[in-house]
Length: 103
Image (cartoon, rainbow, N blue to C red; front, side, top):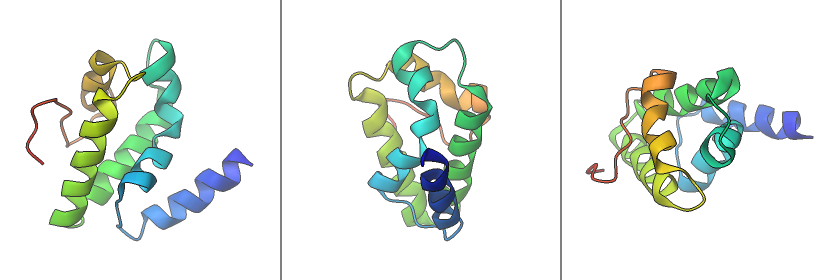
């Protein structure tokens, strides 16, 4: 069932519409890294984060939505902010993660 959910979501992602709920849903593969202390984000997490990052480049509004989503998500418990901060480096994202980023 999870694969169906992610497949449907991935199809939607191609459209280039980023909103908070779709952003959070897309980041499901990153939960074990961000919450549970898994040592690295893994290929699925990076692929999902890169897909969102690429979608964010489609328009100014998508970039702003993605930035806002990541910023909120990164500082909301139980997310480990230090791990969230490393995600752009580890997954080669264009969008930085910072508490102070101006979206």
